[in-house]
Length: 290
Image (cartoon, helix red, strand yellow):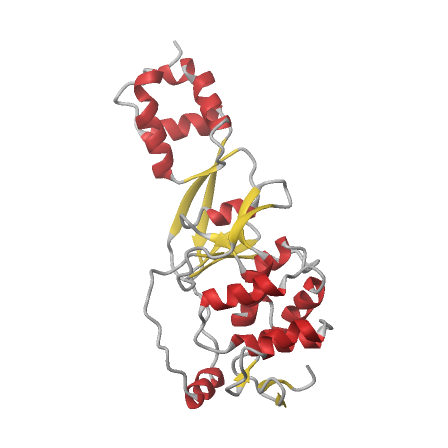
């Protein structure tokens, strides 16, 4: 005799097919069962685990296990049919969005298919210091840049969750991924700023340089400047942005708009540069031979 789930299968599949969502947390599936139990006439004794088991065996649900690198924690997600690793990555945290090196790839600023996917999960708003001192810059950039250890393995992919500063999801929009999927990702101008702030999350300064070169005829300097202002970084990252733009052949009237923001400090292209050269125009230390 067929179970109530078997009888309701057509309606259940229709709901998931038209949900506009492809990856679910276990709690999402529990909510779906709770909200539709009466309509599907599913017995109260049928648990979320029973429902998931049914969907795994008789429908398109697929189990996804995300294994933490730094500890034994494992996250469980469920996909409705085949999904891209970028969609899986976005399920790591609610409200997260793709950024840094992943956004570089999605905007076509590199031909290299990255095996690490970066998801930005913004922190709560915090008051930042307004005072910047030259000695503090030297101290901060003489050390290694902190890197997130909140990473998970998913097949051949590595998904890294970043705790970015609060921006209210500034310049985050929807983009179409390689498989035609809808993805939340930083826009082009926000992306080229983010990778200057955290070059390690884009493969390093030479990869950032290539991204700027590719973005040269696509980037709006007006949007770039507005985004920089709204991000309100303590450090003068505009000096590094302008330096990259000049080095990759942007017109002088474009990169000089960055210069006009003021060059008040000696700054660094990256943390812990071993063998430094200095650009007096941008008051910027960068790797010798860059």
